[in-house]
Image (tube, rainbow, N blue to C red):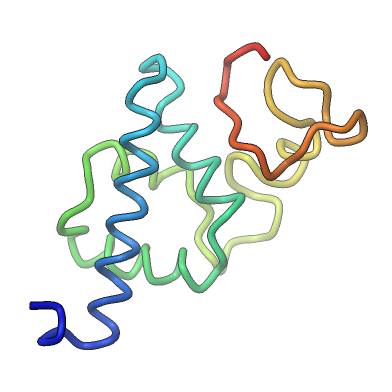
Length: 119
């Protein structure tokens, strides 16, 4: 039962569930953009604290994470990494979604983008 788990374990369970939900969404996309899509979403929307906990779990084996999440982890920026590194951040994010207009033309960076898809 969840009341038997520590607060840290409950947070970790939620992070694993969220990462797997993102991966499940991107499984409906073409295979060549799936990992990039998962990484882009996590890089854009997960706080450094969340990514730190994610990598701590991954470094211990990543129990419960879907294979697509593990594949995407090589593209996810570690919290201690230089800002602007990783997929879906820095210049990559500034340019907007592939096939999109870009943020300067009114495209929202808060909308999920699917790499390689046209709008």
